Length: 321
Image (cartoon, rainbow, N blue to C red; front, top):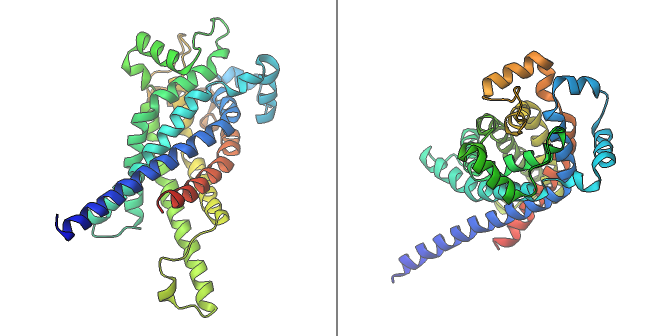
């Protein structure tokens, strides 16, 4: 084996290690986030799935009032319904996303002429890796929503007991299509990560530029600082939270659509198809119907997203050393 071949193999091994590290870091982040935020997710799912008449009866009920109601009527365990599905969905989502994101971004950058930090490249890489992670994780999100929502089906005995049983039952009763209900709405919702990740990258770049300018003003040479500026945990948290708020507010309607499509009402008024569902939500609740649960969504996702990205970045730095 020549020295050149050995160097090529070494680089390839380092790249594989880097992608595996990102996948592992993403999985860990998904698990931590899932455990901490499931109660808010249960509340959000209930609020998104409620029909217009239910909303009118309980329109003054906020996030914590809803949480208190669930605890009082169903017990503490109800606030962690679907935790296993959430963990599997979240860890799968982040593992696939982070494992593919940089690789796709690098390939697109080469194809487009080397503009690694170009907004278009970041957007396309986000959408592509998001699609891959969605294909892998959608069945778990369907299972999560069925488990979390089923207590609302008063006329039926709850039929979903755990993640595996739920996945099997959905497959038996509805076929493979049942495991991908809401997929069209989720594809529509990829605009969320298409907005968030380019913004996150942009905010990080601006923070690095700001730190660089400060150090140069203190006498440091630019050549000594290039590619050596490292963001602090707080700066990573700040960049991730800012990008999440903007992306969530713009793209939130897709989450309402997805939940409506994934729940199993087994009634005449069940939701079928993304456009009929959008029309029905608007007819029943107006434009605000697309934003039911936004408050609890932000309450859940802003801190969890900040923590997730901070843990991911720090863990990834450690793993690729």
